[in-house]
Image 1 (cartoon, rainbow, N blue to C red):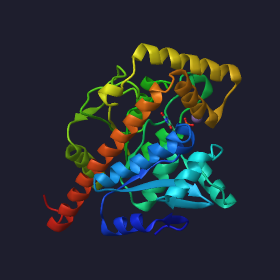
Image 2: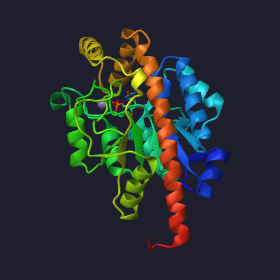
Image 3: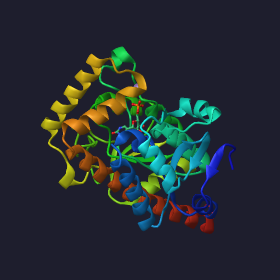
Length: 314
Ligand code: PSU
Ligand code: MN
């Protein structure tokens, strides 16, 4: 096992036995929702994974240790402390050397999950190329991480606070397959269709698992983005949400918010401006992604096991 990683017994036993495990991020806990909705959301994620027969491994920096799997008290600690720093790949060694806590982003979570030997990761939305990136250079480290790290990320696309067309261009350049689960359209987080296409559509968890197995058995390193649209009944009106997003972006510009503070600022403002509707939508899509990631993890574990028993021919 890697140095500096701390596993719960549940996660360690599952990984050792080759049973399905999914990773969950912690920026969504510290910065994605207000308290205590964040803690309730995280608790439900863990419950859903277990219901699907999968061990959930929430990832975070806890007191300078890289934790793979958290106790309920640790989830409460991250959720109630809004000052917990966001931990992307670059932040991990700094926070660990300082002995502090950190809430891992998609990028930070992926880097650690891959070290731990986890193949599936469920989140809400990934970071991407920000609007105006041709001037600001603001491209989330999440995209670079998906390109380099061999893990499948299940998300509801990306929020249109980002430039979704440029985000897809970046993923194409860096060789990341973008799959649509029961959809041909790249989902827009609060909406099911961003107006942009995915590379390929698959309709069952096993078909997705087959793409993952094939990619990694070939030795093609790097991740896969699996997109799962928000459940129909929670989808928001695209025109209304676009207005709110534009307003939040304008406020960020006026107040001079920069760097890693931008995404949490926009998420919090959108939640305020939609009066809770976006919070319900956000929770529903995260839970749906946890369920799908769990089912893909089960299918992948079964495929890997069958391959081991049957030898390499097939
Ligand atoms: N998008 C969301 N909800 C989130 C995030 C993004 O809809 O909670 C979080 C994720 O943890 C993601 C991070 O990895 O924000 C991206 O931050 P940045 O844009 O600073 O890379
Ligand atoms: Mn950024």
